[in-house]
Length: 169
Image (cartoon, rainbow, N blue to C red; front, side, top):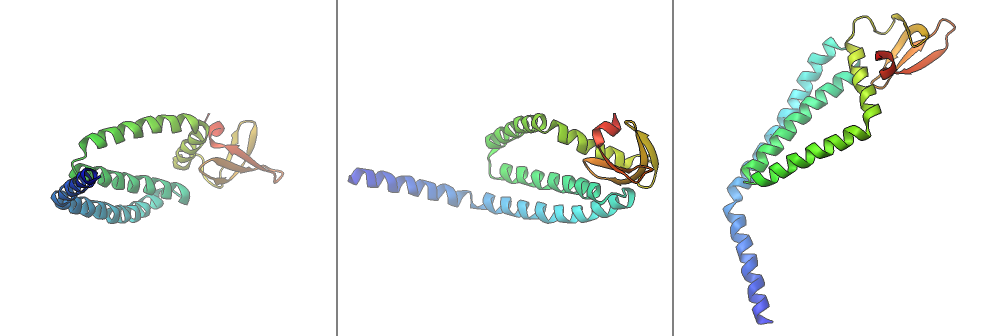
């Protein structure tokens, strides 16, 4: 019994010593995370302003700005993990993220294809809100271009909602 208590206290003392040794690395990692967070907020605001001048659709502008901002935060997270000397963990994390990305991409293939098609449609000059188009045996005025669908108003005032993927095809 006494031997177990001595073993446990020695183990706890070892952990405490390792924690104290790595305290500067932990501080650097926290500083890197805070800088990447605030930098991502600034970049989000700046990129949103720039993109919204070129893209008329607000949802697409926010989506692109969020992706840029998320990339900065993930880069800061990876730098923080490297500062903590967790190189092997970073490798495993990147491997897991790659495999997860493939699985999620396959599971959301239809949704992602509509979203990507919506982004592409919002950048095309010949398809914009107010234009008259003919697609997929429908013709009408473009009322809205969302990330997942396009809304047409036909000549008899019927609204037709078409998935962006079919419009692009």
